[in-house]
Amino acid sequence: MEMKLELVPVPVTDVERAKAFYVDKIGFNLDVDISPGNGVRIVQLTPPGSACSIFIGAGIPEIDKMQPGSVKALHLVVADVRKAGEALAGRGVKVGEVEEHDQGVKYVSFSDPDGNSWVFQEMPWRSSEFND
Image 1: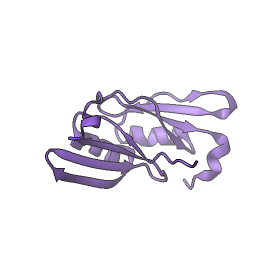
Image 2: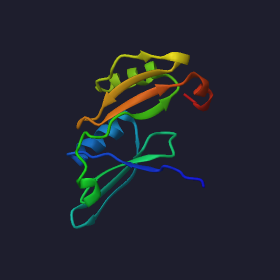
Image 3: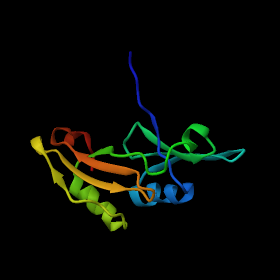
Image 4: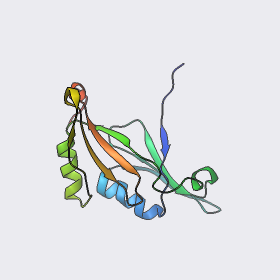
């Protein structure tokens, strides 16, 4: 049975602030931003090159129950964590130090304004997948 993860909810306190962070600072694509009524807001954002998106919004009971900042260690695989971290730092995002592990795997961490945490992950054997 084939399955594809396509949408991950990320709880935030301020949808506009989070949208600006993910689009302007991180470089995600804005796919959807709708307010169909009754206090519902749906914002779907996708990292460039990814088949999986994140959802931020309001008025969805299952999502509204999630604690802002509770999503931890979502991984974004990149060709070069140093370059990716420097790009974010240049846009005013606080990034962690490069962590190096076995087999050349490297990580750089950062968080959104609510404390949801992310990790850039570099795996040398996957570098040919990227066009940067």
